[in-house]
Image (spheres, rainbow, N blue to C red):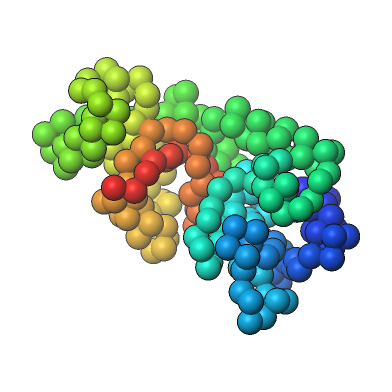
Length: 207
Ligand SMILES: [Zn+2]
């Protein structure tokens, strides 16, 4: 029984529209942020991924985030037990600093190697962006300390995970991240070729 099964039940109890996709990888609910479609009230556009940390995204208004007690309130689900369970799973998720492929651990971030920071190369505009956002001039030492990833592709190759790039979709995502995102090694979700959402690695904002 997953958190989303419980959420699904709680929503039905409140007579809300909620349904899983056929593979049960996502729960769709009516979006409380935009009110969702008025034409078809049986349709739901807020997608919640059925895997910790339960990212959600609305196809209509693009509201997104990670499921929390606050989200439950927004969905009119007032269930303390469920709220605590979500919080606990999220806390455990944040503590786990390993990259996984499904249930298989690939790499612990503690032992991960990070690409060198070539401050005058293609990383230059990204560093300029980080500096402008933080209002400081970051040094190589800062970048190392905060595990800023200058290239996801280089990172994968350096850590002997280049086989992941064999998957076209993942390889394209990787290219997009390298081209348009900056970030440090905090938690986030990457979809690995096996189709399992997982891994930790880039938390960034789009430039
Ligand atoms: Zn919405």
